[in-house]
Length: 606
Image (tube, rainbow, N blue to C red; front, side):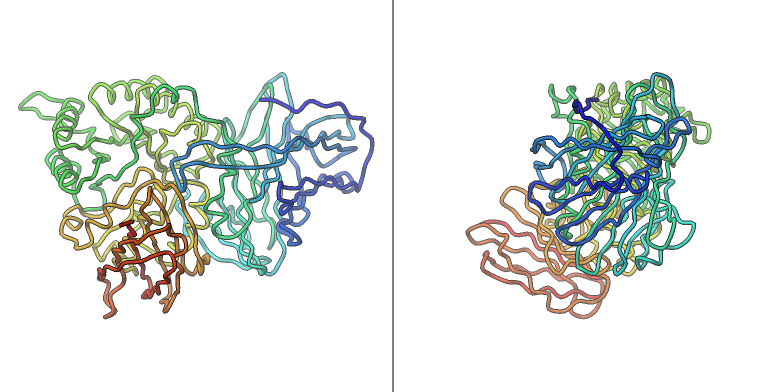
């Protein structure tokens, strides 16, 4: 941890406005000492995004920011960063202007606020130093102008709540929202509130304190000593495209750990078959069958979920680990690798891996038998102990060359930048919650997925799981929803016999470029163009029926593209229609979608 060093003469400055502007001049944040209370406001051009709100936190019972004598801002030079990502684009490029506020409380207590102003939002955090173990809390508020809507979900246990829409000014009482919370203002501007670089700290929920305001609420006690720094409080700002392509969360997080400089060949994004929703028990015979199906489909992984720990073959005298080794070897001959499930807490008669000793013993066993990755489950909270466990586990897993999928987990906060072996995490109301919901599918790309990858377990063609969506919608999900490790929720045999199989199985799990296109709107529809190499995928999903959505193909490069197109049936049924057209960048296409419908086009350069 480093502080900007400077020497300033401080004096009482009640009412003085300190302003930090982004490199383009579009975004600016103002901080003011208002009668002793430190307040901040955020603007995009002339549009107010965050009204004057409190910068307030606590160390050992002493509130900081509410009894300010003076503040002084030191601005640094503009910063440019770039780093590789497994996500919406290959590289993240960021620019921001930094500043540090030195705050003196009336009792002569001093702390700092570090700020960054990006062209797509702002971030800030609080810093101080204590030589002894100290209890830290955060009471930052976020207050918004009236005349818009807010989308939030109120599950801060495992983040599997449904998103609901509220008018700003009519937030429900007694709700704690799990970030990101996204707002759509009457100006057309979007903003999303979340946190970044959450390490060794309890996670932040957003407690409703009035009809248009939230206050930070930590998910448990936080104790720190030495240099104390809160996670970054982040406001993402802009269009739907700005939200989806926003890298502030990872930019404020730690860079890639040195262990990955030696070798990252073992981190291989890809598709996975999964028996849990497909109607098959986790038996040895069934798992071999799933590896067979994966091989036939050209799918890289088979996830063996809860139940394998009870395997035994008394006739051959084999225990669960020996049988898992047999499955790994069998699958390897088919070109398929195995992920294994394990509970974080104790489950039934099986021990969990809460302790470092049990975790490393488990990882060592996985490494010995050739397992590619692990699915770790049932964290169900955001206390400091669990947040520390996430990072410690990824560090240990990297030593054993294991990829990690977190389930029963909270939202991403940028840890995957430091540890790219976190290939996805849940923290979403996914398909295993009962069925697909078209009204949620047009919200989560601009809420939960703004924070990062999510294991939704998409694409089932069984009516019980499809809910009110069509086959085209189910297929479009896997192009719209980001997950470098894409675990399919449907039955492999349905995929084998589907006429669109070759198209949807070609959809990449990571992207070189992503563009959110009009008329995308939260709660209405989403239209995305995504590129991998020279091939583009155009994907759309809707809640209500849409007619005559005209999409310019100007995102295409030069040349003629072969379009393999999956669209909704013209007869009103849930099945899809496959057509083929040649397209170029000067063309426009017209999309029609049924209620709960979808669209996907694979555009291959000829």
